Length: 404
Image (cartoon, rainbow, N blue to C red; front, side, top):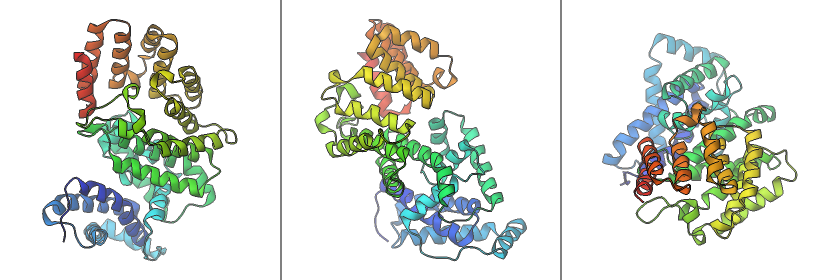
């Protein structure tokens, strides 16, 4: 046993979870029971390891603990019968699991074609993405109870479908790829701007999302949206060193020290966008990557080509309309046509349920009111946004803006 700092435990468990789940599903076949058992093993580790120390073989510890949980589940008559039926048709033989291969294989399994798109995303985020049900609900802009129902039903559907743990066929991979990309995108976003808690970033999530996007790109080099997503992640994560001050306070994009941005990541991301856009069918991730490239290539905030960004958001709104796309397009419009034009469009968009109660809508409204010389109203909306966000760095930033 060895010492392990408490903040490092969640990151280690998040890294090990897909490996452990892969081992159990490979051996036993029942994804739903295996995923439940792994979640209980992770909870046990999170409780015991800070006090007892890190086991000599953390993966083995988790596999053993999860396997014991499976045995307890199988003691019931219905579960025992299901186990016997599974073994009667022959299960994949046990064997060592590759962390990288198993993770992607599990992503594609969770995005099984028998599930709806929303269920694919919810299940994968919970089982493999390291997000809680509450975090998934905030990412998808739906109630937490809805997410819980989707996950439960998705496990049942996978069980009923008889899906086994194996790499997807080319046809399955093509069919399930959009859902896998969407999940990686949401995992990255939660890591880049944590929806709750004391930290703005959860680097373990962004790093894992980038790692898996690199693997997908290595396997599917001709897929424009895979390249687009990887480029978007690199171009966005490149700004991370300048997004916070030493005390953890948030620094908005316009005020960031661009000399601290990771130039190698920017160069790699721009190269991916430049190579992909001319030859691939345009997709949302490619367009978002192009927007990120315009921001990253501007020497200063004042040099940002906002007309080009607005034009790209028009394309994005046609390809993948949604509340946050609408909001970001309004910001770009305000930068091109002025805050009054942006505020008028924000008023018109307020009817969208995804925008009406979201704290980011209040942030944009406050900024536009401030630009229009209406500080009292701006202060009210900054404080309203601060009350709604669960991110402590964002709350501190918004309260500070309200006090200016």
